[in-house]
Length: 477
Image 1 (cartoon, rainbow, N blue to C red):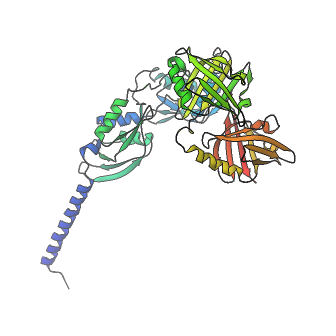
Image 2 (image 1 turned 90 degrees about the vertical axis):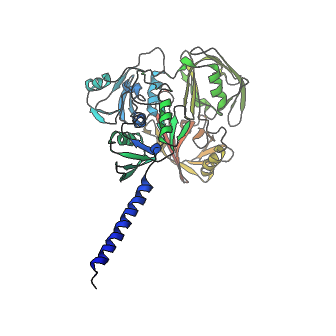
């Protein structure tokens, strides 16, 4: 049956009412409050842009330029040693080489071509030192004011919804890193309106996390933080040494962490750290200390005096004479949970390290028990051993390793080799010590646990001064 014109008119009116109603409901749903609306060229948008800029100062030990960074990996020659830098951890390796002696001339040569990343994340290929020098010359000098804010970081992801001036939804976007945030802010048009999902967490330079529940709070947090720290825009690889150290700071670090290990011990040109694999050092506020191995405890004392770069640290452990001396405090290094205290006396060195992960949270024992259970469950073999890149796996063919609950480990190919094993710093460090028994004495070290499964454990050790990396993979038989 045909519909009459009157009926069609009624239907059209009802349809129009329905469309308008839906549009009104949609507008009411997506409309953002002013405190949540981010607009191009606003002060908070500018602060977010500066906070998300690429920080070029982290690799100044290589390029001496804070306005760009070098895209890794890059190959450099450091005082005659060729190093492939493929992570920020390798910056410390370069510093260790520079820092090995205080009275030598250090130099670094970059092998071209390289790719540099500018503050706005633009990538540029550099084919020669002259091209590189031109870009470096455009950077501000050391510790001069620049645009990027390094005293605060945004904790990602953050969510956004974008509307036009008519409150029409253009799209939604999750932002997951600095580059995405920089590009997002940089591409905002004056007519774009952004609804930001709150809360947003800002990580301050001291590691404190602060929540912002609207744009006004976020603006205040970033504005307060922008000049609240030393942005470290200098080229001095020794700037974390002890120019401003104090005995109170040293005491807080040493007594605030448990189970310090010997990362470096050099006396009279002899490297002795391997003799103390598995030893744990604990420093007390009353000036006493204890060093423990699997079966022995060695009591001693420690004290410090002075200030700045003239702090002396006297250590006396009667039964461990290699440590006994009045050392000079060279460096206190703290990066997250990683802590190092570096002592010097002429060319002699003593460096303790601790990651503090087994102090206070009560979770370390459980994780250690998990890895310990894996190791004690069955026999193991050496599936791979690379000594500074040289494959020496065949030296361990035919050996079965048995990790026992009493802290002993036996490597057996018909003739048993006895050693000790222990776990430290939650599940992150496996200590092996086979004494002088070849070839397993090569494993005497505190190994970083890289990956574990029920059938495989991957370990790695980075040498303290030379920068060599050893990799050991154990597989269950």
